[in-house]
Structure formats: C-alpha cells, structure tokens
Length: 72
Image (cartoon, rainbow, N blue to C red; front, side, top):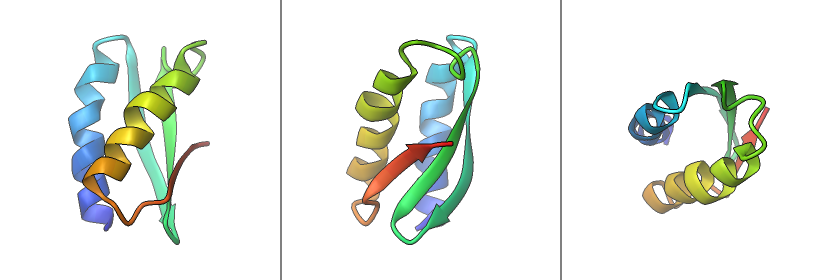
C-alpha cells in the first residue's frame, strides 16, 4: 500500500509546487495516511480544501484500501 500512496503523492506534488507548496508522506498507520503540507500550502487558508478535495480524494481513488488522509 505504501508504494501506491507514494506514487499518488508524487503525482500530486507538481500541482502543489506550482503554487509554492509541497507535500510529504509522514507515515501510514492502519488504513490512515499522514501527510505534511509544506511551503505556501502549510499556512494557506485553502489548505483544508486542498486536503479534502485534492489529496484525500485522489489517494482514496487510486488506493481504495485507504480510509483517511490526515494533515499533520
């Protein structure tokens, strides 16, 4: 599962980098993926939307065994 999640994170990364941000996979515990938004994304008011509508949706779409994606 971790390799699949890394592929999705790598797919999302250029989109975030285009806005001055980045994303880091922190860990996967049970069926929850923990990520850290960095750069401009870390303090952005739209970060919640980015997490829910972008990162979490895409990870769950590509890796159905993931139940949640949490920003730490």
